[in-house]
Length: 220
Image (cartoon, rainbow, N blue to C red):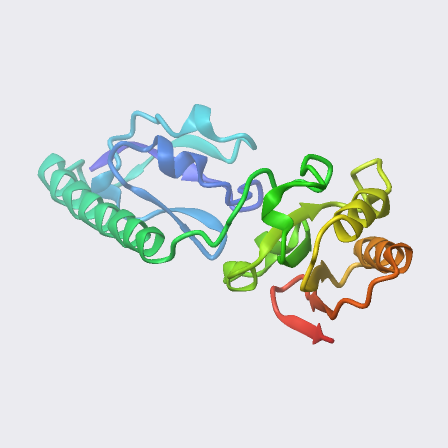
């Protein structure tokens, strides 16, 4: 039969997926970075997806197509919901099975009080902000450590002052610095070196460098 259907211009589609969320029948999917109409009988031809598209890649056309099958859509949506619920349950179990290793609050270098009791005899982890997002198992670095974070590029402050206070006023056992491979992240290592020099203390320390793909490039 000939009926009104949606048409997707692949040249204009940017694969954002907003149309997929707008389709109440589950007729659309993102395949190889582009929106696709998976089955004609899943599409009711009403075009709820059209206003959701930010690039104007979706339009109407009259063409030969299988009739809209409401029962097939119902079964399809039930299956999609089962898959979605299963995925959400897996995420919940993952979260439950991997508890946070954070031992104190706050964590921002600018906010932590240098005389806080948790710094006593602490193994200190000093991390650039982005590292926690780049490395999937970041909390393994945090285990049994006091964690403080900052961004040497975006934070308009000299961290060496606060770090010097923390090191000089507490019995820090060790320091681990985690940074990204990008040049701007090297500032956090510089601040730690400066703080150690000012303190006059001999504290074992290491630097872990992460790649932008999440791999450990150096551990020295």
